[in-house]
Image (cartoon, rainbow, N blue to C red; front, side):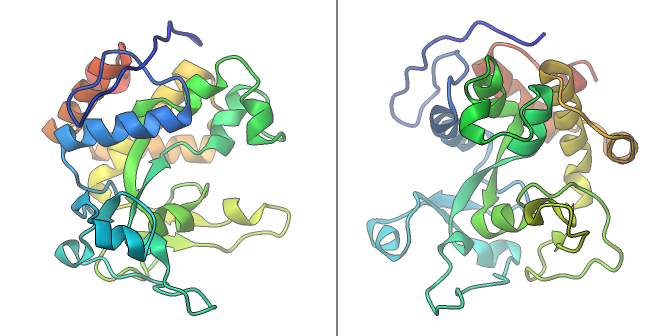
Length: 250
């Protein structure tokens, strides 16, 4: 099923939004903020709590959600830019696509086109805005992951304090820099990740190559649906108007 009826999202305050899926990525981020207050304001990678930024904190760096990294052991890998300016992404929450836009594009045949061109294709913005695929992530981790595929990194070099999240950036020059390398998430969310990928594949026709599929199937088996994932799924399903069958029917 590639299409679903999409209504207009009416939002107010931080309470429950109306039961209609978002129509574009900006509205999806606003919906995600509201949903995750109910789900639990904790980042997907590293499980770091976050809270609304104060007025003073917003003057330090842009962004409305402030990461409490000291609680979860996260330490910034690059706290400052080469210019000496503080790296604002180490302190804020951003909204991460578990299945990146570049991979979503394979379901619409626009993987070699720009995002703006993909958005001209019927259904792409629905896929880009799908709340099942959006999770809160520390900005630095979101940026370092970029669109790199998930996998296992030998030795698990810890470059973000005690946060169980690793990234490598090596790869052939023929591969675009943001796709080179591997991202290894903590074991407790690997099944969650796999079930999101399988859902996006089924709903939007995204292409999953054989090596990645084998890895995701193993992750789904090793990390079955737990109560936290089910609760998150049910809250998002109430908003979207449909389910992820790989969670709902487990």
